[in-house]
Length: 159
Image (cartoon, rainbow, N blue to C red; front, top):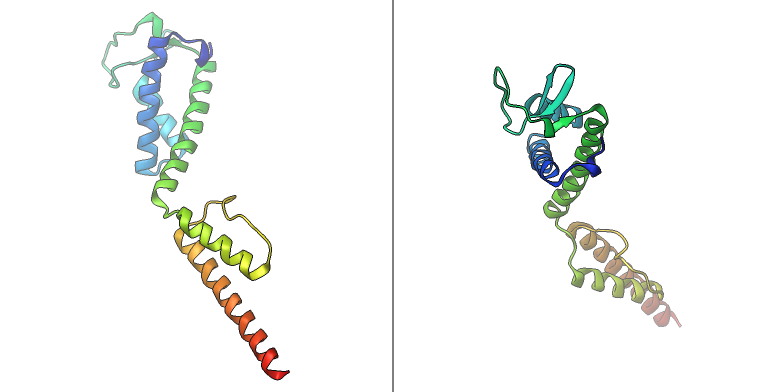
């Protein structure tokens, strides 16, 4: 049984619990295995050599399992892969939000300074720079530009 072939209702239930696991992983800084084990403990029942999804999230003495929520090892492996993929995506989004990415204006300014300095065009848009990084780059370029002009002025005076 693969995740992609599941009925829509069952997929939605799994998606909700997977999203909760991923958010919990990021908030509590859990590893992938810890998060998967927590999800497995809360959401999976093993009865009569069968595995069932527990839609309620808590365990009773005698669970009310539905045959439509029966699972197998292949589906559990798919779920583990999905949790890993979504965790990586959520982590990227979080890092993107937290970091102070350089503005378009800063990138354009750095590109113009570089062009003035080295007489060739370069793009700073191929990588994500933080505001601090682009500020350091522009300061270095300004310094280089000023240093180059001072040398030219000195040579002109020497003639």
